[in-house]
Image 1 (tube, rainbow, N blue to C red):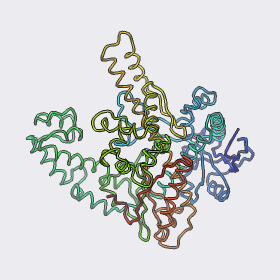
Image 2: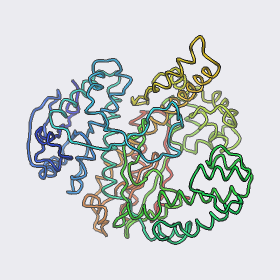
Image 3: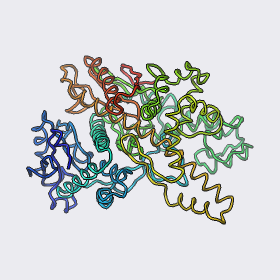
Image 4: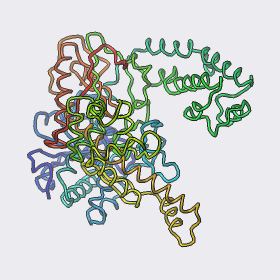
Length: 599
């Protein structure tokens, strides 16, 4: 059986003593004892240590500098106490994150190893809970037929060493039985590294300027009001809306009552969404959209948010790696995925430090290019903005048309401007379009698709299958047939984008994993320390923010140049690790500044 040990890395599996886990203690640092087992090249125990949980930082520190990989149940349980003690882990396997990938892997479906993983329900994610709204981040609003796509861990309990060893063995057998074990290993390593990064970013926190945040709120909403009251500027805009509606008592915060007030004013809408409101030419629409934007800012990032999530000049959100089925992250606290552009100036470096922001230009289209091996598409984006490249190649007339066409291709748009432009891509980029078209066809049939490294899409739920069954009956009504056809199309669009978005998420994880190791090699500086970042990060550049295709690094001024180069080199390395010598580049838009404001 293959294992990390065969590659020369020592593997130490961490767990609690069975008697401690049975007592219901919530975390390893609350338990009376920790058990560490070293695994040999066959994945069998070769050494065993038992010690008090307070000795764990020393145990890990003693192995620094050696090729060591730690394996444990949940990174959010095991890693924060180590970071608080000034100790980091270089490489790990998060058994629960790995279990979610392997138990759902299409490559193992039906195999004994896959069935064994699926049967180990104690390693499945804990019960689902409400995860922060990912507006604009979900694949599709397949409301009626969509599977649960966001997961958050609501309760984590440590696994005893026997349970952890059994799960590790199951995972190793499953990887060895897969058709492409190297890719799966890379995926598990990247996913687990993401877990380490999430814990490290929460420990370090995002440098946050409370005064600037308050200034921005006052600019958009008015001064901070008394508890329970609305800010003055919101009240003024609300009065504009009511006057335009001719209804001085209209309730703008109740969708049903607002809907009725709109209809009474002759605005015939089916909902209060901004998309539908924009279709109507009425004097109430513009102030109402302003009010909705103000309300969103107040609810999501207002003064209550500031009081709850910012302490000692640091904003510490709770990330959920793998929280979306494509591998994208979610957040279960703090709204890290939804910081609005207008608040970005509040991200401010400490004195003597700077922020290095970098995001990838057109990550998903470039991932599609590399996956499909479409050389024409690679050439269109080589060393330049991909959308501008499409214009220069004469495929479309404007950059905006290029963006509409590419997004339409990945999301399966068939109407409007996308419907007109996408056929041009089929002619110019047949390999790329064939890949997403094939994935969509699999989805329409209810099948599953996989990303480049092997993360597999979920199956449609039972309601989807019932709709297909009713639509295919000999006595199906036209309504049944339409419903089945619509559901199949929706799921086809989901799988079409799954392979692209999921592979892009894998590239981003590879970028993060490489970057954190490069930054960890930087020496401590002698300048002004960023004490609020904690003992691990107060004297060297470190990651503080990640959003799908963007990273922000907090660096001492004297390390700014080398940290920026590390970001670039990590991006280039991620491309090579993921796609070998594929002729696709992943250019970065990189800025170095005191604040992380975006233009």
